[in-house]
Amino acid sequence: MEDRLIKFKQALLDVDRVTARELINAGYNAHDPSQIIEQLIVPALEDIGTLWEHADASLSQVYMSARICEDLIDTVLPSSSPNPTGQTLVAIALLDDYHALGKIIVYSSLRASGIDVQDLGRMTVEELVRQVVDQDIKILLISVLMLPSALKIKELKKQLLRENSAVRIVVGGAPFRFDKQLWQEVGADAMGNNSADAIKVAHKMITEMS
Image (cartoon, rainbow, N blue to C red; front, side, top):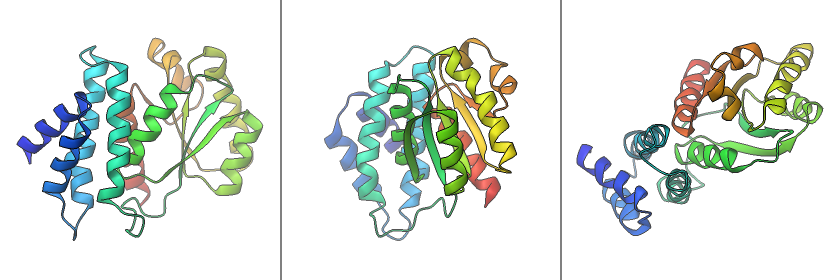
């Protein structure tokens, strides 16, 4: 599996969909498709996210890797297969921010790692509170690029507490990379520097809730 992982990661970095699919098919186990996600797709995406964090991969490579894996996930987990993450409801959103690239990358990476996540798009604090409460969302990922948007998470958290929501908030984006304490100051439960972190944090929270 280690050799296949190295080849799969390289195929993603080269945007080689054909080779990536061949490697997935070669390791596919119809009785336990989640094995491919856990042992091939997730580690590859985590490694590529780390490469980007150390400037050894481009943002476009991270984006395309996530999109390729998102497409391949339908091969590994067809719509009739059970979702390995169970009943936990996970969502991602932009909070009063128009810069969507980071959210798109994280959304695709989470889906490719086997997490059933819904994209809520761009929302105000009030709209997001309503969605979280009405849908009983358990894990909410928020992507921001601008500091004013990041600071609004504090108000979001306050309103969610008033609604007795137990949602766990995971944040990411430039303001949180520049100020390592900001995520705690706005009341988030965790912070991720990249899509690899988002995968690790989300899977950890899901495991804790199961």
